[in-house]
Image (cartoon, rainbow, N blue to C red; front, top):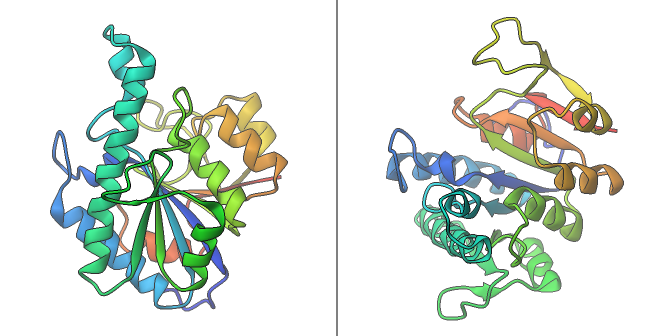
Length: 240
C-alpha cells in the first residue's frame, strides 16, 4: 500500500465488465477477479469504506445488441442481469478472502441478492462491508457510468474511481496518436466541451453538479486499485 496516509473515508469504485475478462474474449478470468478482490481487501482492511458499481460488457451490452436489431429496452435489461452475475462473482472472490460483501441490485432478484435501498447500503458500509451495486440504475437507456455517479452521490462518496485499461484522460486517442498528451488534472467542463472519452455526459454533469471528484486510472497496473483507493495521484483527476 502507499506510504501516504489514507486520504478517503468512503469511495465508489466503477469497474467495467471488460475488466474481468483478462485475456479472454468473453466472461470472467478467475485470476483477474482474484487479483482485483485482493487489492480491494487490502484497502478495506485499512479502514476505507468501499462501494462498487460493476458493468456487464463482458457478457452482454444492451446498446450493442440493439445495433443488431434487438429491442433496446430488452437488451438493456439483459445487460443489467449480466452485471448481477459479475457482482456475485466479485462477492464470492471477496468472501474467499474473509471480506464481508453484500450485493444490492436495482432490479428485484431476492433469491440471490438484496434490493438496493440507500439507507441499507450506507449501513452496510458503516459496518465495514463492501457493497457491490448491480443492475445499474434499474432503468434502460442509462449506462453503468451514470449509475456509478448516482450511487456515489447517494452514499456520500469522497471520490468516484473509474478503473479502465488506459492510464488517464488524454487530449487524443493514445492508441492512434503518439503525440497524445495525458492530463494530470482536467475540469468537468473541458471534458464536456472537448468530448474527451471519460464517461458519458450525464455521468460527468452529475459529478460536476454534486461536487464529486472523479479519478480515471489504469486497472492493469500493479497495485493500481490500492494506490487509487488510498488517495495516490495516479491517472487523471477530473474536478471543478
